[in-house]
Length: 572
Image 1: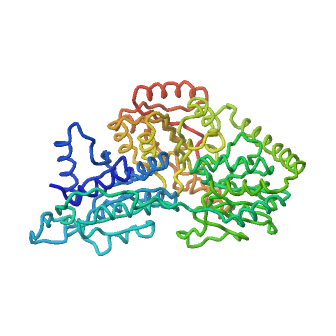
Image 2: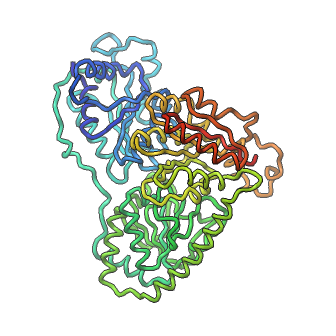
Image 3: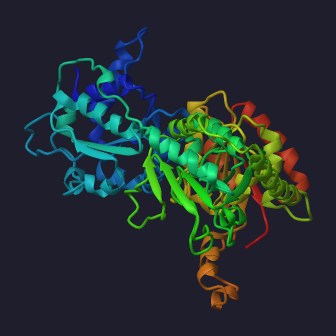
């Protein structure tokens, strides 16, 4: 029996989807039958469907698909149960949308009949309870595309259409639904030509615009590039490096979610997250090239000079999913950063570059860079208590330059960015969104995408609990995806306190002994991972305990087990 569900699974496989992260329910009987049939009859042949990863929690499922897609660059798929499972995807939907990650989410719908009119008609009480008026509306504000499969005959085409949209710039999640009777319909098997649904890129600059950008940068006294996620296309990093070295142009990373520019390059002018300070490189720039950035600066704290010329090149320059957004750019273009930078470099070939000015700018920027690096090295020195800076530096030395690093450290985002030292494109990832709990599932997905790589996830203690670690570590154990997880444990939520102080620096809260943000007594975080997934678990409280703990953790990972280090930092 070949059904709508069979056709959908075949289409996913045709499109290159490797994994289907599932949380199964009553609407998935046809999917379960399709897999059982294929396993029983396909011995010796290539399996026709994506490999199933069973996920006890939906948010972990979508976070894992997100992590895989971020590392591999290929869309993955998630299967959840009607509107309940859709809602249980929770903040992972936000992260996939804001992080521009291609993923297909499919949810069944309650059966549309109740008298046995078709196979799959209602036969459980929940089929009435889970029937809602607008299931797609639950997530429509986050999706690049949503649709209902109404007949089995064109289900494969709709899957390909959805994946085409998800994988085209600006990328993002897509959502499909179908009633159980539709999923059970028998259809005629057919193969689709996936070339009929090509992925669409962001395009390029016109030759005239590329020349305009080149001339504007060339005329600047203090040009500066600002970026957040340019490095999601590794080729863009090389083109940006070439452009900056030719011009003596600095690079400032604002809330970076990828490796955008080597932090040890003398032109690198640091990273800015939520630090409450004006960035000097931004303040002095007279021409700013913003490349792939949602928040290049926070105007109430840190802004460019009012007279600065701002140019904006982005895969998503309109930020159509952000109701309030503007940059005051003189010109803006929707373009692929790697392509646009290649064009600007080619345009520079036709212009005269002042070598003396380039040397002056390079020397000026290198001096500030050296000062920044000296300060970072100072912060990494061991002291009487365990600090996030020292811990991160020790992890950096232990895991080496090729490990994949995922960061969800929240109030320590800047610490991980500054001290983990990722220089190779494609080795550092942040969710790109603001819903916490991403890192654990994402680490599983990253390891599935790169089984040969060492994967390291940084998390705060509050974020660790958001990540549903019992589900994460059970999945990691079952599917053999060991990774290293580092918990910055300060026994509470620091982020809400910092936000309050930003608005009420001298209020009662600034002097209060209790703000309802402490986690006391603290949970046994690493013990949760050990109980759920057999992980190696350690608690470290002193600087001298870190290096030996990391050696034991890496040995456990080499033996096929996750390792969780619960690092106790200074209390709130």
